[in-house]
Image (tube, rainbow, N blue to C red; front, side, top):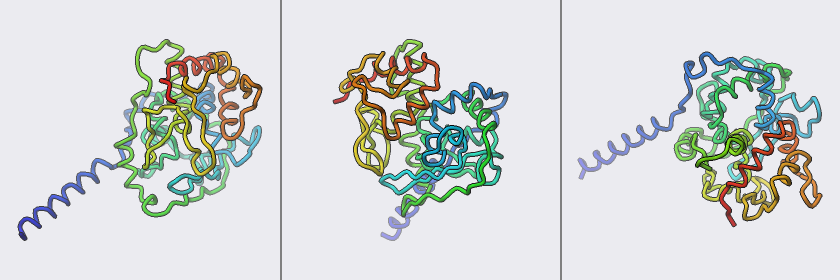
Length: 296
């Protein structure tokens, strides 16, 4: 009996060690970003498409203040409250001394500068699909923005969500560079997929989640409860969104629905961001949405 007990304990330790190993952060290497040169002009388009200011500017910032990425906005969830960090160019309290590799690891691998897992409140499950050249362009644009010395606040999370090692398990299950909508897409729909699934991370708000916060991709863009709030984001699959492509483009440009209602809530920031992109990008999103499977 003692021999069996020792065997089981040993087996448990081996399993625990294996789980610990496979859930370690998996950062990119210098070789992955070697030779990349960023273009700040192109990076500005990535910045707006990715919604960086929407979360990292101060609450209700307007005009030029939207480019002061001092953080501080609070985002409630089932796991606690996440507080957007300072990602301004301040070298002490922001990311002013980050390298391109540091930024790429945060966005594509969810790995912090100290090698720690980052919480997926940063939508790196979507950003993982970003092209590294776009990350380099974004990095170049961020370098043009002002510094702010506001310290980042700690997230307000209880046990066990305060333990970051569990994020490694979450990543094993849900972090992937695979597209949700696959197949032979037109060039416009392919661009729309890149915007919707990667940069603009539409699924993060419009797709329901399971008990541990993973997206239910089988119900892609079918609407979801608003985290930490009341109500639900709308179903934007063809089952419920009966707008024409012209209607969708107009909405993403002006914020007005076909019935002349006006966009509200956090979606107002999304429309403001997408309105800064070329018309062809908003058309691309409309072309992509037409291909999303209908979900009632």
